[in-house]
Length: 305
Ligand SMILES: Cc1cc2nc3c(=O)[nH]c(=O)nc-3n(C[C@H](O)[C@H](O)[C@H](O)COP(=O)(O)OP(=O)(O)OC[C@H]3O[C@@H](n4cnc5c(N)ncnc54)[C@H](O)[C@@H]3O)c2cc1C
Image (tube, protein in one colour):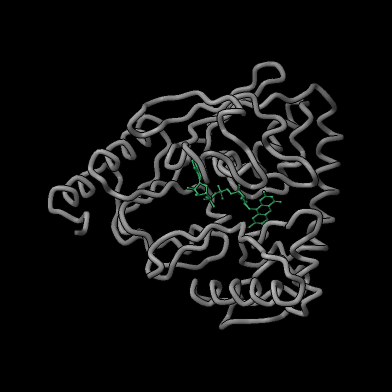
């Protein structure tokens, strides 16, 4: 039986700021996918908590959305409520920084450099939000968010406000208890990181250098979702895709980047089904050629059937 009863739909309609049938493609870096059945953008933590608690109480499916830089949204869209998390406040206390989950990692990297803090330069390579980064231990240039994380303020529908120290988040390579464990469905409200005092100008120079290098080796300016696959132990997914001769392979308007084998580009008008087919094709071919089972890093959300 569908969850779409009159009373549940009425509750959704009454949510302050909610809209129906709202485009999601423009809210993802891939630029792909169908609409959110119901959509709301919220900055106040209490409002976000109330919305997802309400969904839990009524068995309404919900999806938290950050910057949409690690998502492949199904062509049929996402059922239930999509909540875009945009709480972006930050607070610097000595060398500790607490920021709202909706703040972009790149923006926070510049803020802390301005405050002469070091240790967050890696974040200049992660275009997502702080919440999205905690969700799957995002990282770049050999450093992950967990290495600077002190604690996370969160909210678990049904259990209320919680504070998680890193062990409770059970981080693994591009995963955590939020993505694959007992905290599934929980909201990251804010996160506190521990940095070190240092020269902010040096931090900015390093970030510029890293960004320049990245622009030369990855198709950053295209519509993509970053790395499509996780790197297998001791190897690189991009290397395997290239060695299998798959660069330039396409399905519709989705194509494996010629610049970096672990990127799929939406050339314009690619569907989620195109990308999914291409991902599966690459996985089958890499398995056939090298016996390696690639695992997607990008998360497929929405109604696929
Ligand atoms: C050009 C490019 C380069 C990239 N490079 C890197 C890189 O170097 N390293 C890397 O790790 N990643 C990289 N990524 C991927 C992406 O930026 C990260 O995975 C990022 O952490 C995703 O954050 P987001 O806000 O975009 O999350 P979204 O894509 O919006 O969501 C991803 C998941 O996080 C969940 N989520 C988001 N916010 C919250 C919250 N507040 N509470 C609970 N769950 C939440 C969502 O529900 C969803 O399941 C890259 C992406 C692009 C497009």
